[in-house]
Image 1 (cartoon, rainbow, N blue to C red):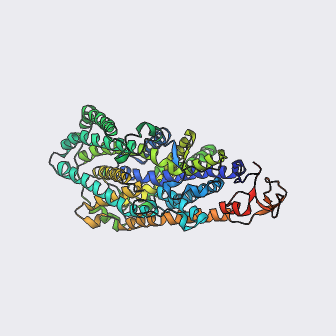
Image 2: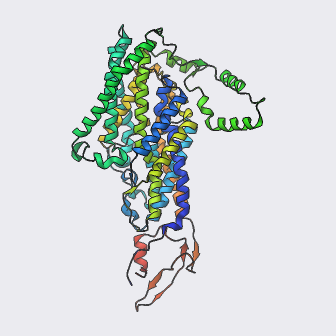
Length: 562
């Protein structure tokens, strides 16, 4: 007889695998409809892209980033919030916990999208892990950390991330404002500075992707990270090469094309072409309904169009215009300065580049928020060793699965966040939008290097507010009601997602179990006596396996034939 921990076959919990599969899709769907939509709201609001164009570009780039650049290894325990050693020989418990984390994150993010609240999917995932961690081992089992680590680091990031992004975005915008926008020949100035901005944009975003590990090619670049982890110069040279290639292409080809295309465009100083329209929402809805009246359609067309509109009807919604009856929003936009149409058109092209590149980086990095918990569930379901690792492999099909539903979420529900962000926070122009997006990338890069778990959503909102303040109207150029809603959503994300996850975990793990003494659900544990005999003093809960701690096994002296 040898004293060993019971290893419960994971195929007994196939239902966890199935539910994890579906909620991973729901989580990825929420990331697309909320997080990705926030990132593209500025480009759409500035009319650099239409909503349909943004959905196509973002969908493709997010999927490519997730599939080809997404991490092949993900942290089983998100951001070291919980200690994997607490779950040794209880990997089935951690499997249940990761399912609950996926449920908590997906339910909260999708509900927030429904109510127009921009939230951090990264923080929703972390909050869900905290929730089931507390339910399992109490508050002491959580790594509360310090200012740059653990839960406290997340709270610190709420304040640091928007400020960093805002400072970087304002610096970029002021350089643009004084060197291009305020000059008499701003159009030609913009064409001259365009290749320079492309060079720095491509280099910065390429460096960001390399720094984040380039996903499944992490081993190739593992000696190219900052600080004590390696030499950064190879990575810097590669990123500079990407930037130089983009800058040279822009200088020799794209600048000529844009000059020819826009040089005869009327240079409207009030920028009516790129400014958001002021509409009456009720009249717009009525006009749309009349234009799509189905009375004379054949029955098969009516049902097909109805189904398509139910899924993708948001692509036809106006997410740029503001309500002409909303005096507050009209005042916000009138307080913001406008520049010439021809010049802003050049910055539209810049914004398309930065938005596309950012989507590629986002897909490579944030796909782990959706598939991380499920990849852990899948790993434990296939692994009967009972040993819990801090990292688990992510199969390619799981990355593709997550990337697909991120793109689908943006296509179906992304319009909701774009409608409440962008022009509904401040007036967005292409030059402002370009500065906002680059400021957000700079902030994420700096914060990542310092180990702060920041959110791209928080960074883009912080950059938007900061650039909006660089206006003659200053405070009046910001919709502070929307800013307050955004900040409130950040604060409640972690506890809300954690509450959902913790309650579901407790409901499953601590519910009364049906007792079984027949051995139908596995070998009944035996208790050893002083004379070497064994007996069965009690029944076991079926299916057994949850919540059997080290102390339980040791005190009960449960013996399993080795």
